Image (cartoon, rainbow, N blue to C red; front, side, top):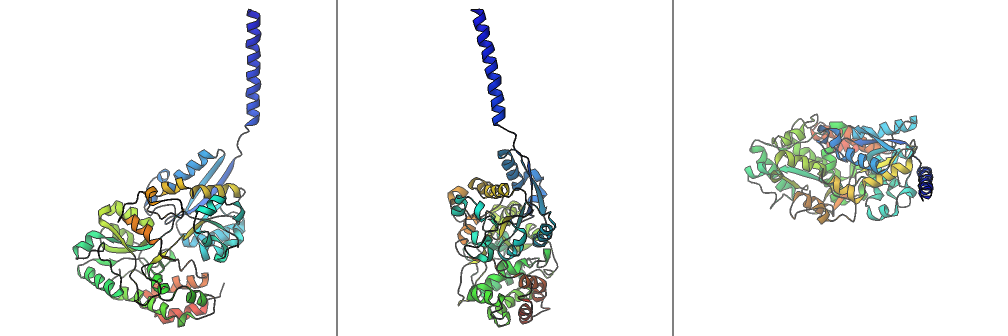
Length: 440
């Protein structure tokens, strides 16, 4: 009996060893894959003040960690690009030199299309569910034309443009923008005069920070497009018409200039870089921004003291009314240098998943591009800032700068501070745009 038991035990031991060996043979060690991703320092995955926190507290750092844990063997190095505008040329140069990151975060549309030579098209690598449930693929499809190669994923949000305002200042000067926001230029200018007379800066902007005229493209560009729509603008950009003949452009530039000339904007706007700091310190009534800035404003001033409004309409006869600039203005692309394009696409899909979209919304006020994310999922309260922004997403004009050719956008950014401060007339800028269009 004892001998039989010993034989049985020995048999079990041998079988256990064989099974363990078989299990090891069936589970080879995961392949090591090291990827690098460039992320813009603001307006996409990193909130305006998020960089002041330890990096392990950033949303994008935590998302990378979750992806790495779910995909053994994969590591992703995060590189933050502080100058999002310059990052496009840096990526092109790095791609041609063979050392571009695996994934790049850029402005979509006409900012991304010129990089096609160093981008791996991902049309056939996108999961069917993503194509169905994510909006904004047109902004990453070459020339916005269906059927052309898709160069990347939209970042998981619609960035909506608005004025973020200080409710306490507005109440002090007798304005109630919750009940009566200005919808005409006349009412808007009258309100700015009240604020100025009360000793506050009505609007603060930095029109040359990063070499980019953010205020024009976030606010005044709406006044341009809303008058006659996009077609005349794109026709001029293609050389089929003249910017100098576009009276809608001239009117928008004059309104842009008048706000500065009347003292409704910080007088150093052409050179400043501290408008956001002044707003957070309660020195400024309102700032032009996108929704990723809202949470930081609420943290600094208190949720009860932060409100948002869209730009007033420039004319009663405008073709488009009660809208604003917005849309999926940024994207994620895979470089031709990447050794692991499938893994890169998998990570981009992961960032756009419903679970990650909801996690990102815990860090910033976002308007998801996923069709299966509901107001209930986001916990939106009727009348809240976030609810208003999500409502505006139903009636936006896609980014003008993302729709124009590089020579025209570059000339705008070079000359707009001069127009703002009266050193160049709107007519002179329009004529200059006609000179540079078509140049590459």
